[in-house]
Amino acid sequence: MIEIYTDGSAKNNGSENSFGGVGICVISQGKVLLAASYQEQGATNNQMELKGLIYALHLAQTTYAFDICRIKSDSAYCVNMFNDWIEKWCANGWTRAGNKSIENLDLVKKLYEYKKINYPNFKVERIPGHAGELGNEIADALATNDRTKLEKLFLLNDINPVEIKNIDLH
Image (tube, rainbow, N blue to C red; front, side, top):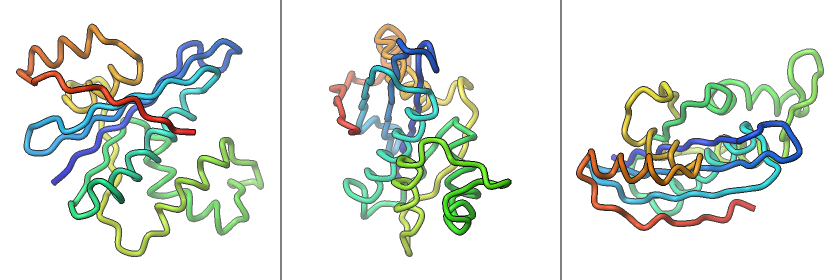
């Protein structure tokens, strides 16, 4: 079983000088297999959450294609979208209830490509944020670029520091 934790963040969310980040942490049998991050100027929190989930799904379908994957996010927005809303939005011509437009439609459509997979090897689950779940805490530290928190998590949990992979989500 592979657990893929994803988190997104944005400092100064919604402003011209916002700075966003994505954190990914992959754990199997208590061992951190991958720690990855991505940073982007001018991004919103929701954009970073969506990009993180898309990358987690990509990992499930490529690197961990022969494993069962549990993708865990603390974003109710992303998890509800993937598990409940996205198929309705597609059927409604990519509009929400009341004929309202969908924000970040380009990312939503990328997410939908994974929803259409006939026999997925993954399940997307919501977990509480900042509740002490190690993978989520590592993903949060990576998304917020908090190296001090990350080092402390590795030290307190007796995890050998792993190389932080910088990923490109463009």
